[in-house]
Image (cartoon, rainbow, N blue to C red; front, side):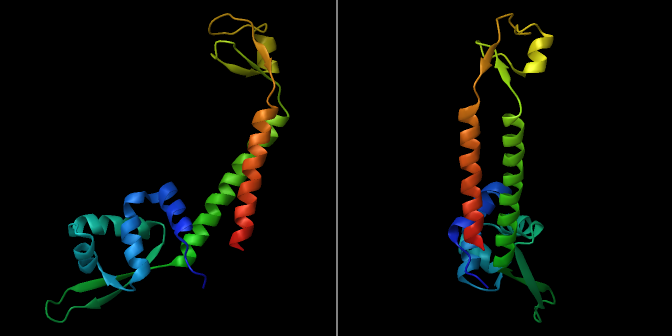
Length: 170
């Protein structure tokens, strides 16, 4: 099992759950099997707030629990732990989704000529520009052919960075 890095944790939390959960995750990284009561005490937060954060993490299967019966009270107490492999799994899925989206954008932008309004009202394909006689449907200005090579280059660079990141995960 690989060690969970702070960068992977932050990216997953930032994109899926929220960074307000980071402190709780850091506690679970340091200590195994903490009860929600202990977490509440360590975070200095009320129990319902901690449970809300735990349930949000559990929704993505990033944490697990074991439950034990408190013999004195007769209640069940849940002891929570991180699932590092699930952080990596979700991070990899997020990168895969982003890569698919980028590949689609690259394909779409490389096969289409764009025409834009000088007032930035619209950007249309060559077919749409022809249909509206190369005038902006919003303001009536003459549409200009736009060179999208800079956009394509930035998309390709972004895609390459994601591929490089994915290779490091392997």
